[in-house]
Image 1 (tube, rainbow, N blue to C red):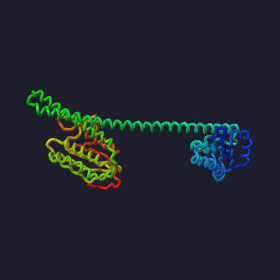
Image 2 (cartoon, rainbow, N blue to C red):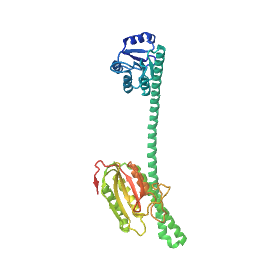
Image 3 (cartoon, rainbow, N blue to C red):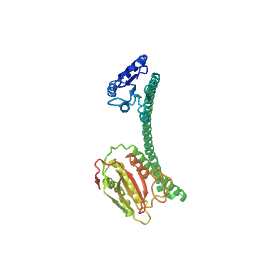
Image 4 (cartoon, rainbow, N blue to C red):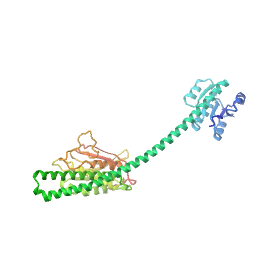
Length: 387
């Protein structure tokens, strides 16, 4: 829009009205480009061919009324400022024109030329303000988008660097720890007879503490490796994943006489290696945290809730006591070191794996006793069931 020469389209089916407007507005030829049309249909054709900034239209016209024309313009060209002129004193017309947002100004005929000129000037000013606001918004949006893009780049680089450093720290820490363990064990093996009872006890404390530290760094290493796992996602047979997860747990299952039931499960889309790790941690916990003098019973099944596959690992164990802590936090333990083995890493790994797949994980009390761990994973493209 050229603000020093905006285009005004006047529409009236009476030729004498248009002629009168031409004469009375002649002095504005230098300020406005004025077009005169005899019908709403013709006006729409004109607007289809060229840009128009302000429309001034009569209400009562054949084929299409002023309100109908303005309504059409509101849909097709909402940026055009609309003014309605009518000899109809019916208040309903004015209310409809204003309340429905079809007009910028409503004038009754005969409208004094100064009043009409003032209305057109205000319309032009409104159009100018709208366009300037749009330009400012576009600039601000462009600036914000550029900042967001840079922020994404910075955060991505920071995340990658943090993951790399975490991996290196966890990996490199284990080597000196193993050296400490080896020499402490050699000291205990070869020099225990010459050590006092207190000194021998201290050696055992060293070995135990370093072993625990080695396990913690190993868990932290496994946790960081999830984020750096770039294995391509593919369809994963959950039945096969459960079988693979159970293989390293067979000794624990045999020792505890545990019963593990796996229902038919749908295939999912993800990393088989990560999902096997997820299932292994959940099944291992279900067996480990069993009630004294009871046989662990673990059930693995699924339900569908609003199109989302929810997988469940249910046990009959000790349950999860109410706590203000998040049990999925790293190194979070709900029991002392003397009660159950572990280092509070397994559930944190489970959460990271599930989130890596775009799902969520939570737990609830098992109505028959114990705990049910729930997690969601993306559906396979096939959606088939497998054992």
